[in-house]
Amino acid sequence: MAFGGFNDNSHQAPMAEINVTPMVDVMLVLLVIFIITAPLFTHAVKLELPTASSAPAPEKPESITLAINAEGKLFWNNTAVTMDELGARFTTAAQKTPQPELQLRADKSTRYEVIAQVMSSAQTNGMTKIGFVTNPKDVSR
Image (cartoon, rainbow, N blue to C red; front, side, top):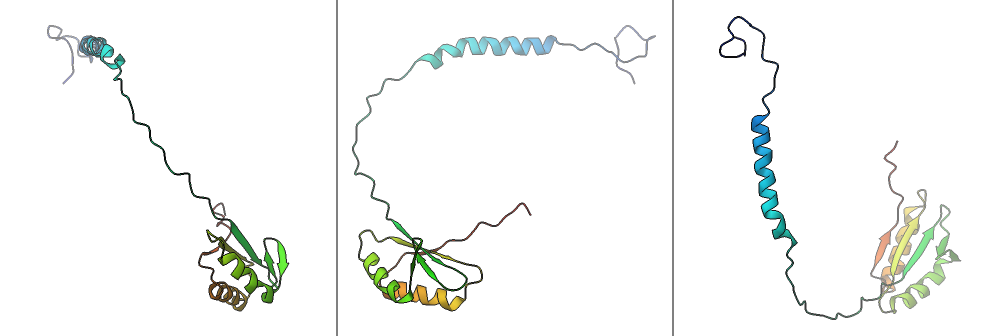
């Protein structure tokens, strides 16, 4: 069953012409709709918006970086400290308002005992915000 003209029964090839009349009709209807609706989008609504004032944003608390290397040595913001000095520094930092966040950076091969001692000292001296800093996992491998 081939597609063809109504009167041409001798020619059995499919019709190779595309009838674009319905597409042109639809495009003209859309053009008329857009011509009619386009002026409606140009009208703006005038508003008098209220003014408001807000309190200034609170200060972001400072952060303390406490690094622990593989040998268990401590570094308070890149300054070497001992475990004995650490308690006094935690007490001083805990009394600040707002309290700074303690960012704990430990080497991968650091013994857990040292990390546990540092966390215990921070907690007993009043530090409540403790976070761990790690390197992101390399997904390219």
